[in-house]
Length: 489
Image 1 (cartoon, rainbow, N blue to C red):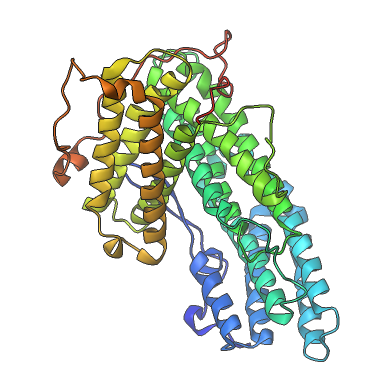
Image 2 (image 1 turned 30 degrees about the vertical axis):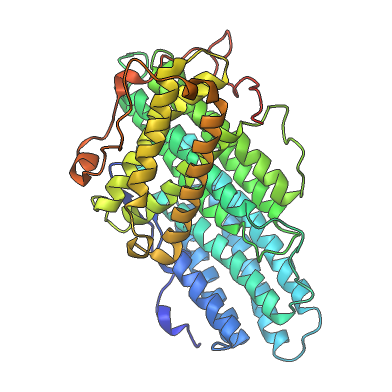
């Protein structure tokens, strides 16, 4: 059977490689679960350099590898047994379409959509099975790398859905026309808010490992953090299905699957969050994660249901907070490109990592306090603005064409700069009264002094003592969405 030359011999037996760096960790997918594999095949199909029959043949190879993964995992996890038969059935549907499409084109798009619906069912079950805290706290389950095999399986299902959607579009662009009324700019916003939510949540949970409580063993806390990080990686893979080219009848299914995974993150993290009640820094990170989740819900409503209405009873964040979350999310996407490629010590990666930490741990607590009605004073207003100037200057020293994987990174970098400029303007407008009088405690230098790359890499946490003490937003100290703030003009 002909194969895509670029990926000759690749099958579903790979498992994701785990990368770690000072500022991030996660999965780097390979084989038929990788984004590169999917994009290469779809590009060849659109260019006409691969026939539909060969394309579907490659898809069958993906599904064959998927079935092998499920078959192997089912030997230690009976919950996966049903997925073996389900995948075999989908393989048979692809084979039927492959045979029939060589003879007639009648209702080809409808048949492809039917297969996509079955794949979404598979994705939902696969994600539900792997996002199971009891399994991920089982040492044997982890030692066998079963969770990595299931992550690979989720990646293959996501790629298969995207590939079938591409095939349907090439077969009949009219029948699969995307919704031209959709604001495609919201897709980067979805990715940015998700990145900020997951990053802030995981960063907060690191405080659990430092907790002195003896009620929960350290190994148990590490198992919880490992589970939450695993769920986060599955969520990052699923969100790839939010694509401008995806036909309008499928985004709601992606949203349902994503929300299920994020609910698992919330459920598992609750146990650790109870240990952080006296950790001001971790509590502020949880607050940022909560606000990012609210922003994500609003972005999903806008994209999936084309709704500008509020998605929940919770208020939306101000322009300043929204811009901060988007800036952090975009920078995280650039940083992850470095971390995943093993270049986490690169000078650009160090600069970006520090900018993320400054915005997360130095700027956000002060802005959040101000928007909750606390008096901050001229010194804090100027301090925040100085921090924003430092971050802006540091980012402007980066040449986007020299970023790792510039085709992807440069666009996220550009959006980060735009959002940062928006935040700086919003903050100065919100605290305008403080900028009409000279600041007494600490005069501002004429130029920010943060250009030394070595300093950026050597200082993982800055101004820890200056992070404002966290004040509970609810009497019970529960981590709830922030209280309603005054909307920015």
